[in-house]
Length: 237
Image (cartoon, helix red, strand yellow):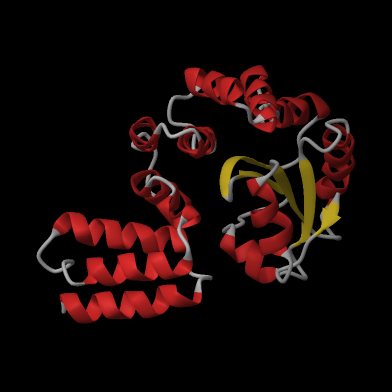
């Protein structure tokens, strides 16, 4: 159990809910039903051994968060997963109702199995995840990188098409299209390649895509990336 404030709500509730369900108990010292419900929440959630987290917030001391929840009465209890409210109730509840509420937040047998497979992280385990959820946002990129490492670049690109584009997905797709060229090439050879492509980026779509892919794999930490992006803009516009 953690006491949260307006200042710590982002870290202790929203950010934490990306890893584990968080139950927010909105209460006040003068609220009689809050004093009844609080210990029940602490007991039931404590029995989950960390699978669910309890965050208590005093609405008198933290009006901004209370207002954000549009609280009409207390106790008010909200369950958050992945930064979003997924369940709630208002008013004191008995232990059976609280157990049912918390039970809905616990991972299912399938979710536990997927978590174990992702932790294993080998090719067969990741494929088993995709048999359950074909567009799993963690398993797809992880398996794509395994495929790229052994040269199955087309298969990796087809796999990546299952998930929305993110910065990591763009990087892995670029790695597949370049076939590991960036990692293997000396700096001088890579510079020569980019310079050669730069002369063709405006009229040649394939050259422009290859140029962008090379920069994507080089990454923002490479001091040359920003300069090459400026040169690309100058050629295109």
